[in-house]
Image (cartoon, rainbow, N blue to C red):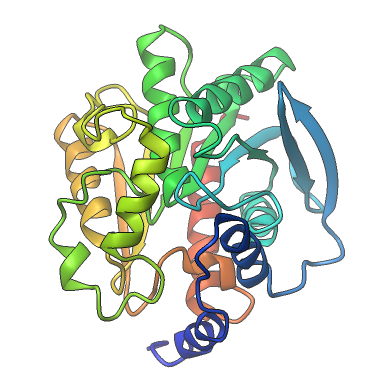
Length: 295
């Protein structure tokens, strides 16, 4: 139905091809992901969480007693609060909650498990500031989706309270890249390809096995995790990551919703200003989060 609208995003990505240096790659992601303006009615406030910068967002009529904790994508090596600001703020609006976006430490400067330690610290920061676990949703796209799962696994294994729900967008959960869609979708995915993922995985793992369940949650025990919404595009090389993690969650009786959006590319929510399917996906995520968070 909306297959042609994605062409505008493809054109944007093609106009700024991925450079070779890490600094330039980080700058490019901030530019292409933040290409559209942010609504003027969103209130933003900076916050330090441990050693990491974070940012609150709040849309009018949102419930400040509920929070979406968000981990950005970028393969653990790039991405930022800036690149995902619009996506996070509009999801907060749709869910009628405030959001806290975390600028976790990036690889290769800070390899595994630095980002995971930061994610756990951010959740504990919210608890320490009086937000009940049941009133927190954790979400993320791509690497941030994997980090969302790893954070919840660490919380569960430590006997700590879990969030009310989780939201995974185009999640990267298999750093070995064993899914068939890595190759099957290579020609239609404008963003994510095997050689690029291998480079990112090496930088993040820093010698850790790609099968470590906290680096690749596809190999983790997922029992006891909260209700989870997974959204993925049909034109993604990471399609099989989403499908397989949904199956793994469902197999251990975790309430799981899997949405496969026709023609959509990796983390298409970033360009929701120009994508009807992006706005619809954010609305669906917002409804899911609002439904599952305690009042």
